[in-house]
Length: 81
Image (cartoon, rainbow, N blue to C red):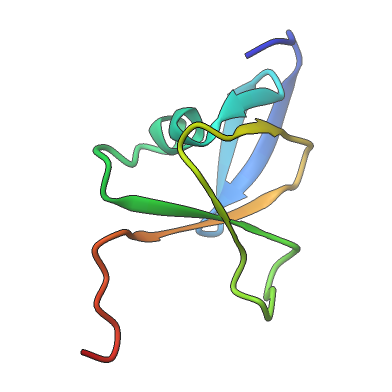
């Protein structure tokens, strides 16, 4: 992380406090207590995003702002199978 400011984001509707505003997708998953590699992180355009979100890769660098919203879902999902 590159700054000293504290911000908050929402992950699966849970508020997560972060020190700084720049981190990777993997760092964000870790801060939100999602362990291991079996998670997909999706960046939402807002609560109720009809698109379902944009996939964030583990090594993508995110610049965050207060109130950003994310969804985490299992990476090994087999919906409809």
